[in-house]
Amino acid sequence: MTEKMPMLDIQDLSVYYGGICALNQVSLHVNEGEIVSVIGANGAGKSTLMKTIVAVKSFTSGKIMFQGQPLKKEAHDVIKDGITLSPEGRRIFSPLSVRENLMAGAYTRNDRHEIEATMEEVFTLFPRLKERINQRGGTLSGGEQQMLAVGRALMSKPKMLMLDEPSLGLAPIVINLMFETIVRLNKEMGLTILLVEQNASIALSVCQRAYVLKTGTINMEGTGQELLHDKRVMESYLGIAK
Amino acid sequence: MELFIQQLVSGISIGAIYSLLAVGYALVYSVYNFTNWAFDGFMAFGAFMAFTGITSLFMPFWLAALFSIILTVILSVGTEKLAYSPLRARKAPRLFMMISAMGVNLATVNIINLIYGGVFRKFPIDTLQPIFIKGVSIGRMDLMAGGISFGVLALLWVFLYRTKWGLGIRASSIDIMTASLMGINNNAVAIVVFAVTGVLSSVAGVFYGIKYAVFPMMGIVTIKAMIASIVGGLGSLPAAILGSMILGILETMVSGYISSTYRDLFSFLFLIIILLFFPNGLMGKSSGEKL
Ligand SMILES: Nc1ncnc2c1ncn2[C@@H]1O[C@H](COP(=O)(O)OP(=O)(O)OP(=O)(O)O)[C@@H](O)[C@H]1O
Ligand SMILES: [Mg+2]
Image (cartoon, rainbow over all chains, first blue to last red; front, top):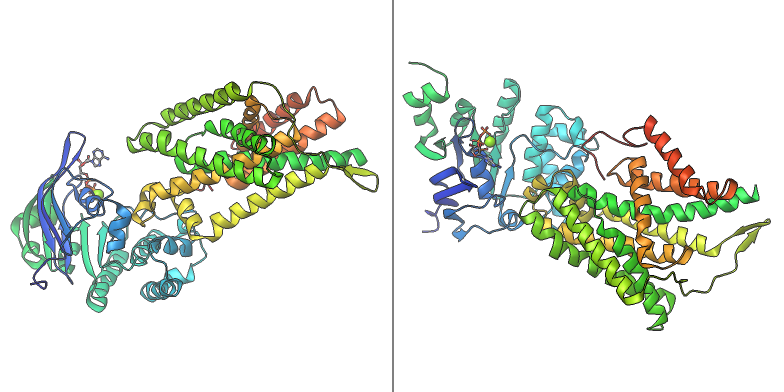
C-alpha cells in the first residue's frame, strides 16, 4: 500500500494573492523516483505552485500531502521534512562565497562530516564549483550560478528536489548540460524531482510525467512523450504549427 | 605630543563606544531595512539598569553590567516580538517600522524620566587614577571602555563570520526570502539580531554613562553613531566602525586643540566634507553586500 502512495499529493489546491486567483483547484502528484514536469507560459502560476509547496506562500483551500502527512506550515519545517526548492532566477547569495552558499543550503543539518560529504558529492556533480570554492557567488557566470543554485539545494539532502525554471537565461548548450545532470540525479541517485519550465521541449523530454498549467489550472496531463507529441502542446508550447 | 596621545586614546575609546552603537544600527538596517530608533532608548535603559544595580541593589560593577545586559536584551527582543514582528507579518512598509521604533523610543525615554527624573547623574563607579606613561596620562576608564568595546565587536565578528547562526543572519540580510528557502527560520534570526542589538546598546550605555553622565536623554548620542555609519558607508559593519572611529578621534582632537565648544561643529563640518567627496560613504558599496 505504501508503494502506491504518491510522495507528494496535491488536491484541489487554490492560491490567491489578495483577490487574484493564481492557482485554481490544482491537483497533481509526484511518485517516488519520478521526474515530473509542469509546463506553462508566463504567469501561469508555476512559481506560485513551487512556493506553495515549500510553504513560503500560503494556500486558501485544498490539500497538500507529503509522504502521507499534511505539509508543514513553516518553510524550515518543510525543508527538514525533505522538500527543497531551487528558486527561479537562481537567487544566489552574491556577496557570499561558493562555499558559504553551499553551507547555507545545509542550514537544516547539523553533522559537519555528513555536510562535508554532501559537499563532495556536489563537487563531483559540478567540478566547476570546486574550482571556484572561495569565489563570491555573484562573480560566477550564469551557468555556474545555476549549478550553484542546484548544488545549494542538494546540500539539504532533499527527498524531493524542486526546480523552478532551471533553463532560465542559459545558453542552449548549458541548458543541455544542466538537464543531463538533472537526469543523472534522478537515475543514479534515485532523487525525486518536480520541475517547472517554460522551455517545454526539454522539460517534456526528460520527465516521466507532465502537467500543463494554464492560467492557474491544470489543463492537460500525461507522460512526457504523450505531451511532446500532442497537437495542442506542439502549437502552444513548442512553437510547432501544424 | 603628549596632548596628542592623550586625545588619541580618549578618541579611540569614544570611537569604540560609537562603534557599538553604529554596528547595532547597521545590523538591524542590513536585515530589516529600517532604522531602529528605539536603540536610543535602549542605550539609556542599559545605563540606568546598571546604575540601579549598583546604587539600589548593591551589586558590584560586573554584576550590574551583566544585569543591565540581560534586561536590555529582554527589552530589545520584547520590542521585536510586540512591535516589529507583527508589522513585518502584515508586510507593513518600512516607514511604519521606523515610526513604531520612534514610539518605543519615546515611551522608553519618558518612562525612565518619570521614574528617575531628568537630572544628570555621575555613574557610581570609583574613578581610577590614570596611568602615566612617559608623562602621558592615560585614563584607565578609557582603556577599559575601548578594550571591552573592541572585545565585544571582535566576538560579534566571530559570531557573524564563523558560526552557522552568523551565516544565517548574513544570508537573511542579503535575501530574506531565499534564506527561508534554505530552512533559515526568519523568526529565530530576528530574535538573535535583536538580542545582539540589546547587548550592544547596554554595553554602549554603560560606558557612555561612565565617560559622561547618566540621564534619560543620553541616547541622543546615537544620532552621532548613525551619522558615523553613514560616513563609513550605510549598512556595512566594518564601515560603521571606520566612521565611528574617525568621528570619535576627530571630536577629541577638536576639543583638545581647538575648543570643546566647537567640537560638534568642526566634527560635523569635516564629515560633510567627507560625504561631498565620497557620497556613498568611505566604504560605501552601491548595493548587494551589506554586512
Ligand atoms: N507577489 C504577488 N502579488 C500579486 N500577484 C502575484 C504575485 N506573484 C505572482 N502573482 C500573480 O500570480 C500569477 C502567477 O504568477 P507566477 O509567478 O506563479 O507565474 P509563473 O508561471 O511562475 O510565471 P513565469 O513563467 O513568468 O515565472 C500571475 O498572474 C502573477 O501576476
Ligand atoms: Mg515563475
